[in-house]
Image 1 (cartoon, rainbow, N blue to C red):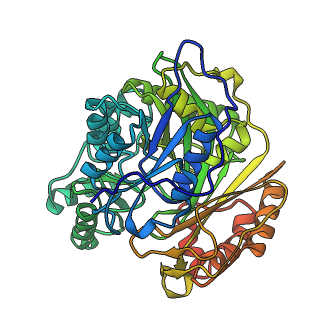
Image 2: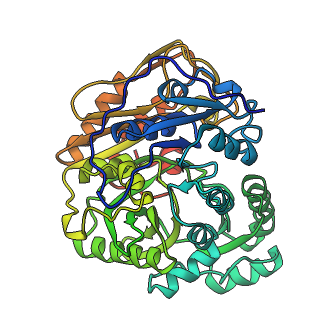
Length: 476
C-alpha cells in the first residue's frame, strides 16, 4: 500500500551550485527509486543543483537517512524488496503522486530493467539513465558480447550465446578448454557464476549456477567462457550524451573480490596499466557504448591478463557502487552529469579535458560477520564512529540507533580515501579502517583491515581470485 507523501524533518534549503545550460531546463523534482547510501548520494547531488527530491521507502525503512534528507517521501510497501522497492506499480504510483519529472534509479533494483524505463517513458517521466533499447542490448551478456565483437572489442573465448543444457555445455567446454566459467546471461553482482575445472564437475555446478540465476534474475540462461588465468578486473567509466558525444573517465581496478565475485575494494587508477592500454581500453569502451545508442553514465568491464591483453566482460548500464574513486581522480561529479545529460544537455567536457590526478581507494563496509562465513548481521547500530580527516570521504546512510534490517543488501557505507600516490592512499586507508568503529552489529571491517595490511595488497600483487588464496593463508 502506498501512503500519502510524507514531509520529513530537518530540511535544509537547497542551493544552486551549478548553472543549467541555457538551451535546456533542469528538472525541478526527481524521485530516487532506491534506498540506503546511494539514495542519500543522489539526494545530496540534486540539492546541490537546486532540484527537489522525493524518497521512496518501505515500512522497515521509515527511519532511514534517505527519508530524512529528501524534500518529500512516499511509502511504497512493506519490508521485503518484492513488496516495496521492487513493486513496479507502487514505484510508478509514487512518481505520479509526487509529481516527479524524472527518476534516478541508483544501482540495483530497477536500474537495469528496461521495462521500468519504458513504463516511465509512457508516463512522460524522464529516466536518468540509458534508453531501454541500450539496457536490453547490454543487459543480456550474450547480446552484449555480440555488440562488443561488432565494435571491434576483444572478447573472452566462449559460447556464442546461452547454452541450453549441461550436455551441450560439456561440448563447448571441451572445445575452449578448462577451466571455464558458467555465467548467468542476465544480471550481475557475482551471482550465477561458477568456475569449472574438470568435466566431472560441470553438471552439478551447472545446476547450481542455473538455480541461482533463476532466483536472482528470473532467468536461468547460462553461457560459458574460458576462465582467464589470474586476471585483473578493470572497468572503464564512460559518459555519453544524446548529441552523439562520449568520453571515458579512466579506469577502476576492482580485483579485490570475495568468493562470490562481489567487490570489496576498488581503486583508481590501475597504477600498473600502460598509458597505451588505458587509451585502447577507453576507446573500445566508448565504441561499444555508442554501437548500441548508449546515453548517460555506464561502465564497460574487462578482464586484463599479465601481458595487459584485455577482454570485454560486460557492460553495467547504470551508476556503479565504486563511482566515487573516479570522481576523486577526475574532479568530476558523475551524478551531476547524469542529471544534466538526462535533461538534454551536451557533455561539458571533451576527452582532452579528462585528466587523472592522484590515487583513490574505496572499501565497502558491510553488515556481515567475517567469523561466520560472512553471514549477514542484523540489529541496532548502537555506536557509529566513522573516520574523519583530510582526504577521507564517507558515503553512508547509517547512524547510531539505526536498525539494520534482514531484508536488504548488507552495504552500510563506502569509505573512500585519496592520496598523491597509491602508497599514500593505502596508508590513509589503513589508518581510516583502524579508526572506524561500529557497535551493536558485526561488520567486515576487521577483515578489510587484514586485507589492506597484507603484503599482497600493499605490493599491488593480486588478481580476482587472490582473496580466496589470502583466506586460505596464501598471498599475505
